[in-house]
Image 1 (cartoon, rainbow, N blue to C red):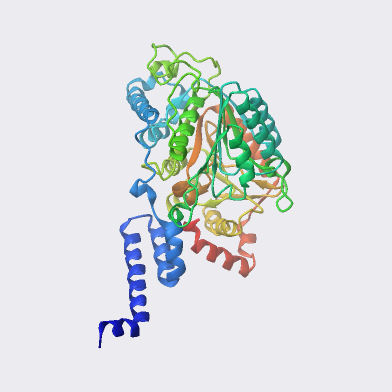
Image 2: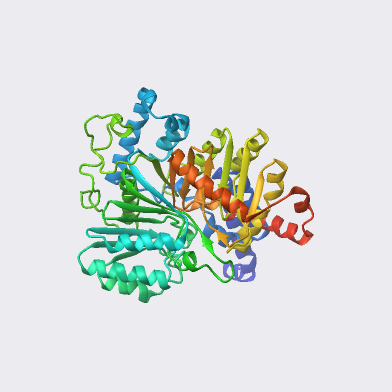
Length: 510
């Protein structure tokens, strides 16, 4: 039989063979990546049981970019300076541990971990305000934006074409026209519904605007799953905001489906603002290709990142920071993680903090899909006698993630963990509070996506005053929440348990 006729008569078998080879090769690739066993087994199962859909999903969402380093930004000078400072702090902590305050000493393992895994500098001279009401947060941001005279740098996962979105847009336009340098990064998937008109108005007025990793098919389909979930505002190099709120009216007015939305932002003045600035500018370099040179225009303390003379405070004992104009002393360590980092630093920080706890652990998260390490740490802490409480939403904006989160409740209750569901709206805060002297605020949820796939930012707070404020508000929220009892949970409808089980099967992908 001629070769041409052979191929014509066996075309279906040939394509089937190529397809089967592609699927099996992908399965081998997934196994070879040596990921978390649960995630590996989930991908293998999907690829084998749903070959076509599984293959498409893997191309879109499954590739491990931390391994292949496609997001590496190690050449940036400021990031190299950060690394040099973190190495200096590591050495000085070992040498001068007795000079640190009690809170730093008690949390030294967490601090050291973050200095190693993400080069997160410890900052001391900071003024910090905790804001957990959307209207108050955006009133403060708007007021500070209106006072900007030099530069505005902003990035958000979601920027909405609504009332607050247009209010901020108009301010940015006015500031750009007045000569202020204005930069905005929005996530291309998170802000999928943001109209071109909105962006063009900003660009035509002199605002520099870039989407984070624009999804252009087919060129960037494999990166659609890796999103920038950070929320950062830096104004004149002096004032910074970070936390969990996006630019959207629902944080102020709530929504018809979920009611009032609650989240947490930090307003920061002091040394930590410079860390926020560097993290923003590194993301800016990634999206724009523009390298913004460091100057006092963007870093308001002269010669920041250079070595000043010695002094008596923690920062000066470490010989890392110049004289600060801020006299309040709130110790912060700003860390970031994502596919561009060598380690899953935020997940490791959560794990270290949980295992380091001695009295109580309070967690608020809208999405709870922990990996095996975090789940085991929480159950172990509770079974060791610690008071572990987790606040979840009673209703959610994501159906699949909601049912996935519920699938963990049975084993949490079995371990003695108190699980609550918030009843007066949607609590979108991402908080961890431990022993009254350590807490975290940021963009990272207690889920696998935040641990591995998203670009996230987190403030580690080594401060009894701020942690006590967060814990006080958390305990107030519990009064508006429903405590789940093991006997009642066991009586839930079978259909709910089935939904949880199916959602749990896919939980490593979310």
